[in-house]
Amino acid sequence: MQGMKANPMPSAKKPYILKPQDLVVVVKVLCMDGGPWSYRELASELRMGLSTVHEAIQSAAKARLIDRVTKQPIRSNLLEFLVHGVKYCYPAVRGAITRGVATSYAASPLVSKFAVGLEPVPVWPFPTGQVRGATLEPLHPCVPEAALADPKFAEFMALIDAIREGRPRESAAAIEELTARVKPT
Image (cartoon, rainbow, N blue to C red; front, top):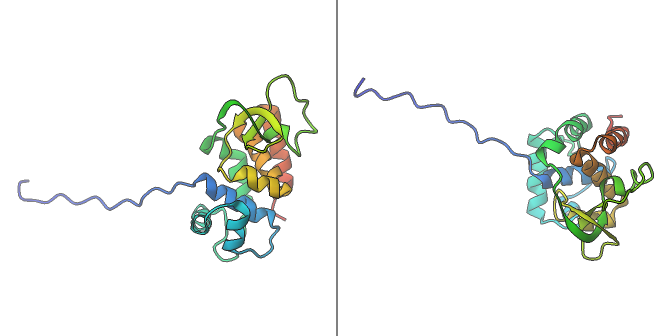
């Protein structure tokens, strides 16, 4: 076999990885209720760079979470990912006690369904936050500030965090709430 060249392996495509900020951008677009949006508007409201938002939309389209033509979320795919994938792709990471913005079961809309016990509530760390609790790292550093400016976005992100944490009762309630909000019309 000397002198014969081995058949080269066909070049494999680089695997695609959905970044947490891609999901944050898709959720923000979802919060706009099908209305028109611009990259500049998303970047401003999310406190992200314009190129980051553009890349996030392109990535979400590759992952089939956003329609390439309408630039709107594909609700059925997004709901499936939120219910079955988000806790595995972006598991919740708890940390030290800090001041921040309440999330998960400690924030609207779940806070009215669960009694907050003696354990510290989950919060996104934020210097001007009004709640003291256990750090739950947000999907992206922009989330706490963007959530304070947009209550609807805050609720979606809190519901996603309840699923990310994986506590059965809170997760089931979050899935029920997200299904009602995201379900294709």
